[in-house]
Length: 251
Image 1 (cartoon, helix red, strand yellow):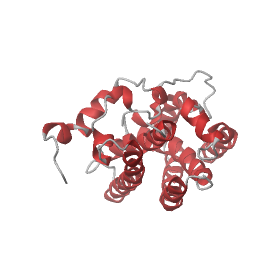
Image 2: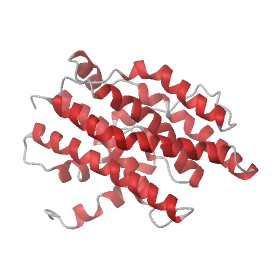
Image 3: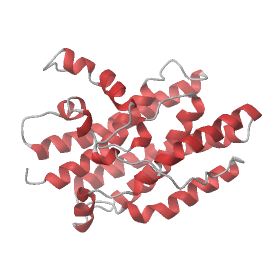
Image 4: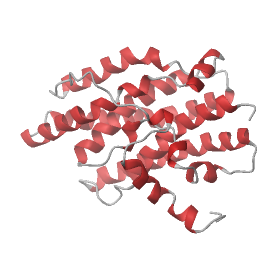
């Protein structure tokens, strides 16, 4: 493939939103309130809308007859390049919000930089997506504050979620070989430059929520190289069921 690094780079971006969108979509009808349920469902739909654009571009680059659905739905587990954070389970609502918040802060900063990409397609996707992701970040940040500075029980659960999910945040700033190649060409985002401001933003929100910033220096990684947690197989079994049960089905 002529543009293999670009193709791989796009998958790395899109797979994050695909898996997170699948996680949120599973909550439809199970939210703590109707308004919150609908909000989480809409965020899921936003993410799926964004990944369609990425996978359409990836399919064009691949040039092997695969469609956006094929790329999104029919790869094997090791071929998905999402970070481990987005595949963590919905243990309770605090975990859902904590996972969303820790990703949203990164996602918004990432898209702001991707708008400057020399690749006009990626730049356009970022420009189109950033308004939605700005809302996602406000929504999840507000809920972290609300739960953290709420009742004793909500504070305990929110702190537990942040503490458990913290070990997956550092991977957001790891660079793959495809990442480095795209940065060198002025196409990709140098995520290492986002790390300091990310942790400052996250720390500021946690302070407002009267929550403690975890002190753990141990971090999990591997998702960007296709090495996932035990949760990924279960996610894909649901995500891919229709495409595998009815091959060549068209929507």
